[in-house]
Image 1 (cartoon, rainbow, N blue to C red):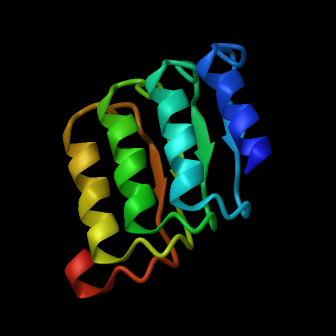
Image 2 (image 1 turned 90 degrees about the vertical axis):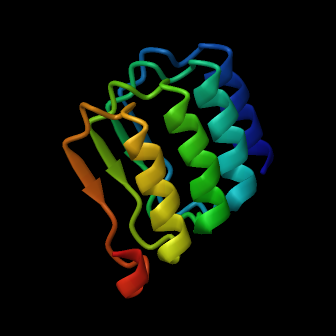
Amino acid sequence: AEGMRLLCEAIGAGKLSGLQGLHLAGNKLGAEGMRLLGEAIKAGGLSGLQKLWLEDIKLGAEGMRLLGEAIKAGKLSGLQKLWLENNELGAEGMRLLCEAIGAGKLSGLQGLHLAGNKLGAEGM
């Protein structure tokens, strides 16, 4: 948790503003890690990001809500690819993702990866 906090502080302070890709897959960040990352994103620290790998981080619906808030803030407008596989989003997480995308702040998104999220019929 300390490493994620330090990374997010650097992002929020604009020290990684030229970063084009961020790969956090498999780190089990959960909702707390997503809260930290979301705050850093909303501060504008990843404005140049094009690719974001968040697969298998135990995001769940709460983590998706926090990511959705960051997306709706419009600070990821250059994002082209987003990986969210194996995060146990379920139907509620999918609804929250669609709500965030519906805000129109990811118009450049070319790839969205959602495999293994147990969305079920309600999530589709």
